[in-house]
Length: 178
Ligand SMILES: O=P(O)(O)OC[C@H]1O[C@H](OP(=O)(O)OP(=O)(O)O)[C@H](O)[C@@H]1O
Ligand code: HPA
Image (cartoon, rainbow, N blue to C red; front, side, top):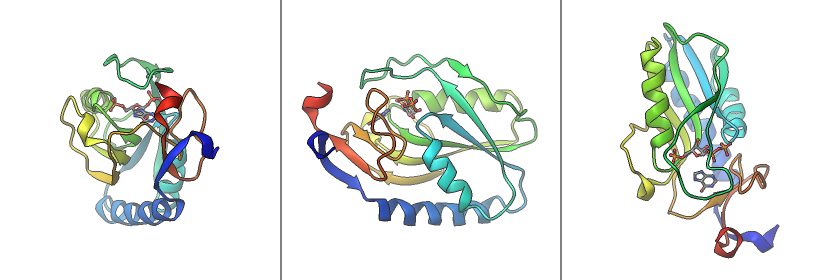
């Protein structure tokens, strides 16, 4: 595995600590609300599972899948729903859970889409943020870590569907994806 990794950007220990902090904050902020976590497949699965365990109140959990980057490491800007929610968002306080915000195109579309369907509120929680890559502004309500503009894998994030199961976040060597 080491042969493809340039550098570990966020250690397993730092992620675990941050996830617990985020869970505590979300528990406080959503005390009297009707919280529904919406995880964006597939990248958010590991973060969503760990985050949900740190939220000390009842939550609904649902998932969406949207069009992806495929094997390329750059965004096309096209967002299409491939798998929709099972639950209605009406009168729910939605917290979208993402592994990473890059251009912001996915979340700009999803936030707007869920608001139009009648969600009471829509907020965003992302493990990673790459602010240098932003094309559209999106309000990030809960952020784990800001990272530089490196292609990263691990903790849910893939390169060509591999490396999602690494317990840390690492930058890939450029020769792997260029
Ligand atoms: O801010 P953006 O530029 O829109 O990029 C962020 C999106 O890209 C990644 O998903 P990806 O399409 O790689 O799918 P995956 O989660 O199945 O790996 C990530 O999980 C976000 O959904
Ligand atoms: O750096 C990344 N790695 C994996 N998937 C991604 N989707 C957006 N940025 C990334």
